[in-house]
Length: 233
Image (cartoon, rainbow, N blue to C red; front, side):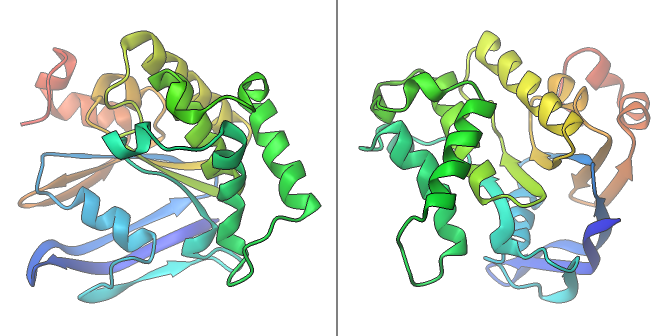
């Protein structure tokens, strides 16, 4: 079943098209890895999927019951985010605000859901800790728990291991694999090609001259640099 279908999508940045006639679907249970050089439209596509960017042409069609606000979103890490002045519990629980509209209060169900996601990611012992005091890997787990609080069927991860050390990155990919096995649908933007492709079921390769949708194996075969640990040319 398609959760999202992009139909002849054209997206522009500062009135300049950066993606033209893009068509693809995200199926339930997919782990779609979006790759490409800088400037090929990855960030613009993320904004469009989240409802923050209107298409210049074409459409993004969500399955019944799924909206852009029901997508759990883990943004790229930044310095402001690292020093966020809140407890782990406050950060995770805030993921429930997406479904509240104008009424920003937490119900018993919200708190139960937040507790469940913290247990799921093995961070319950961090509940009272300051988010700013955590390691990079711990912070990413907390932010993933927050994203899962908002997610109904799908999470979108934007460069989730950028800035993490190799051990923390490997642990994060292990979590993504587990989520996929549990039935969560994942869209992941990544420059960490070799590791992220091990999680992927399909690859959307954005280029300045078009795009390719393929399996990880097909992608690796077409790009010798990948097999040597490099980026696609």
